[in-house]
Image 1 (tube, rainbow, N blue to C red):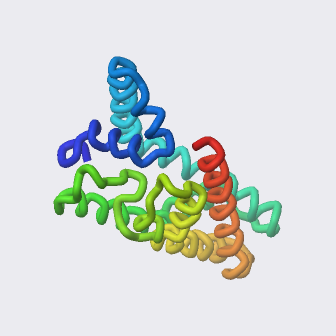
Image 2 (spheres, rainbow, N blue to C red):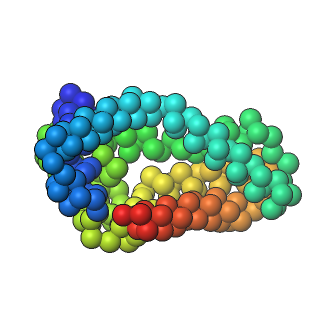
Length: 191
């Protein structure tokens, strides 16, 4: 992403696709340049720090799902097993990352590139993120790779506990939808 598009262009696109684009455009030139430099540095650090952030997210997911299955369904699953299920169940995301990388190298339009949604694997890819933030966020939940991961994680918990497969998948899907709903509400409220 850094070599093909550049963090400056990625940052410009993120600002243009946000609901705060008008506020940014109204800033004086010196403040705009300062904000842009801060945003570029933030984007760079977050991009290179993504593997660490992903591991932290997996640990949190494993803990939440462990608690849900232990107390909600009476399943006896250890934390290490829960973490392994979450990590292995999330492997389809690698295919999405490979497709995103391929699209960048294939010559995607740098000015239209959306780092949050680089490949058409959900309906939100075809929507304008500035129009309806809530609808855009909920449409992004219908991602092929997210659904695939939910099913795999549910199957993993069902195989390692006495919970029915459909119940396990429903429990994982419920947490995912709650996460997307809360994110969509906060995104719409603070945009």
